[in-house]
Image: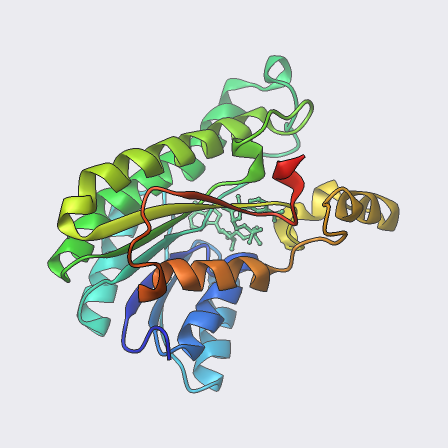
Length: 254
Ligand SMILES: NC(=O)c1ccc[n+]([C@@H]2O[C@H](COP(=O)([O-])OP(=O)(O)OC[C@H]3O[C@@H](n4cnc5c(N)ncnc54)[C@H](O)[C@@H]3O)[C@@H](O)[C@H]2O)c1
């Protein structure tokens, strides 16, 4: 098992990629804190892990609220004896239906996306990295997007900006905390078939077109991302920090 007895906190683990990673990591022997603001989704992830004889605890909360983040980290420490892996996966695409050019985006829409995607990740690192250090070092896995690597004409500009910020922050944190044995890396998914993508691929034709835009000819599955995250969580990546890994069917190469 590649994560035997490791304590892992995954944000946004009540759906999509976060749930897939929580289940895969648990199969590999990790003890998971499933942190999500969606109680139903988070409970379902915990139930699926427990059914398979895995170990999981539930933390309901919002990554953009410091007190919720601190409680989730305390839960990992108390229930699982420390924290070894912090997987910052939670994000939103937009607030409501305003997901277009910057000139059409109102301030509330901008703030909502930046608050969850960037401030939320900052808070998880602010309170999570000291816990990783207390445990003797560890791995931070951030999730950005191809949208943070390349310009988007009519996609959510606040989302792209938030993900660009996550990539940049990853590099700085990798340099700053390398001396403490904390590695920090970022995954940039392409289109992955999860609830987040649904509004953009809401007809079979749109789904097919977007899938084919990926050179490998299909949409990503949540497990495609989880397998890369497993590598970054495990000692197999012990000499890797500060890198940006597109997991995107080749779309960022074009
Ligand atoms: N699906 C894609 O095509 C795609 C592409 C590139 C990047 N991503 C990124 O992958 C990550 C996972 O997304 P997904 O596709 O699994 O989406 P998803 O919508 O299925 O899952 C996101 C989860 O995050 C949770 N969440 C949202 N805001 C939160 C908050 N403030 N506090 C706590 N939890 C919160 C949601 O409740 C949900 O369970 C995100 O960072 C997303 O930006 C997704």
